[in-house]
Amino acid sequence: MGAKKMNVSVIATVKNEEKNIHLLLDSLIEQTRLPDEVVICDGGSTDNTIEVLLSYQAWLPIKVLVVPDSNISQGRNQAISAAVGPVIAATDAGVVLAPYWLEELVRPIEQGETAVSAGWFEADPYTDFEVVMGSTVLPSRRDIDPETFLPSSRSVAFLKSAWEAVGGYPEWLDFGEDLVFDFALREQYGNFPFVDTAVAYFRPRGSIRSFFRQYYAYARGDGKANLWPKRHLIRYVTYLVGLPFLLWLIWKEKVAGWVMLFAGTAVYCQRPAQRLWKNTWGWRPPARLRA
Image (cartoon, rainbow, N blue to C red; front, side, top):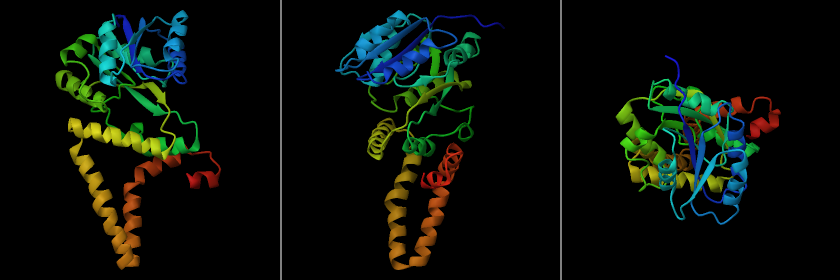
């Protein structure tokens, strides 16, 4: 069956993104399939974000909404409500979209195969630290099951009617809202086709402090939404019980403690280390070992 071209609205939320929003907008201009409209909800920027957005109206059909003090879910819902297209493609400020992102992402929907299409995301590091951070915390394609993969809302498309059917993004949740939305869509429509060529590139956190601040926010969101309780339980038992026990064992039985610490670290860090080794291919040996 041939694909039926449908109007597509790209939506995103922003707040104080004057230094980064051009990355997203420039990559939208370079798409092989241009969006029919771009709806961006601003959560109350105090910088020049809105001025930057409006300056791009010469190249993109941008509609700007201003909803001060809105969270991400509220902003996305406002943008989708204002969108006129039957197909919504969601992304984030600051990302760089692959040139075929929109064309590839909406194809399964236009072909009538699905109501939801899951895109992919990859790190776009600028510094050595960001290479390490991206390799450590982000999965690679081989780490995920395409049949059950839940997309980030920096790279996902869905019918507006599907968004309406599940009640939109959960506005009571500040972080992790896209996974709750994914679960609702999957319960309603089943598994989504995984389009790994629809890639959104984003910059990882640039410091330990900003990473832990993000980790805390998402862990809090997961707890509020009761997401991954078993995973978080294992993680906290490891940090709060296992690690202190190993440190005590090192103090009491030095050899046995060090052996167990190194063995446990090797198992826990195996996949991140493999990703890091691959992502630093071509680096000089001292820099690679330091990473």
